[in-house]
Image (cartoon, rainbow over all chains, first blue to last red; front, side, top):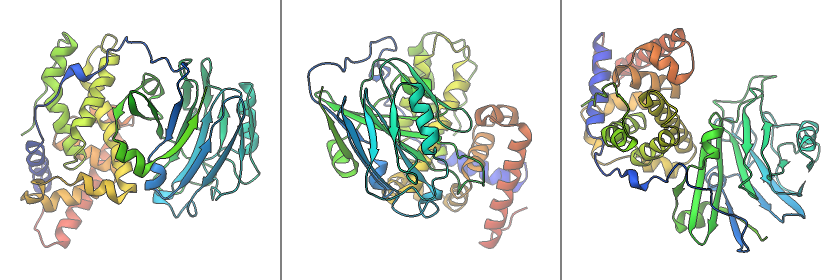
Length: 240
Length: 163
């Protein structure tokens, strides 16, 4: 090690020595074999789209009506290169027998990293779903959510798998690549900030990088406060 | 203080949790530059381990990767929101005599910062770092070299003598 390496090591060890200790409780972890919550009861479900919407200044609203139609409004809040690190917001709406229809609002500009309407249509149709998007609004794709659904979402064939337990939810898929993409290269949506699901038990956020879809499936949970929801959420209601 | 994680014979998850929780927190703490989310990251990562505990032969590297991935996600979120930026500042760390250097480390690119942390805090060999980042060893060496160059230049600009 040279001097700077020694200094870095010392600084990091000093920082690490200040880390809080204790407080962990394995009992707070859910049992891995516990069943998924039954989400098919008669109660009204409130789906809260993820908090990054407000934080990034990006607007994304989708009103869900299972079995009916969905209207989505996706606004980038600026050019694709203007957002943080060339971020691009996309919205996936997952609901059974639902059609997406993009209405007014901003555009994803540029739509790099997004699927073209044709691509979206192709993927959606492969699952018996439909997608409707105007020529320049390309990032909204609808997937059915009953049964196992797997869709390749990007150039690296990252899979998003949706298990049968989930019925309706909204995913905000954020492509916050390290800068605008290279020409001809589809950026990888490496992070999914999904849905906050609210019911009588409270709210939970499911977050998982795209490279760990299975982990996401198994429902990482962290509870968030009502205040956080109020400040940073787009609320989507649905009834079944 | 670096918490040395000894090779584990696995045992029960509860035992694994008890013996690795503080380490997980400290690694998350360093990777997030004193982030306030270290406990959450550790807990979430241990949850990932628990879900696969029976299938993972050595849970330590798996846990480490989960922590690194969680910290990367946390960093991205923090980078996009001033509110989260404020949240990562932890009282006490500001007074570190190493704050100046840590600030430079914090400004490294994400992958450079992870490499520096895993190399100089965790003491991991490049091969293991490459496994965490899913890249080649040569990439790790390159990232480390560039990071050290940045650190050296930054510190020289600030009038510190380095070699």
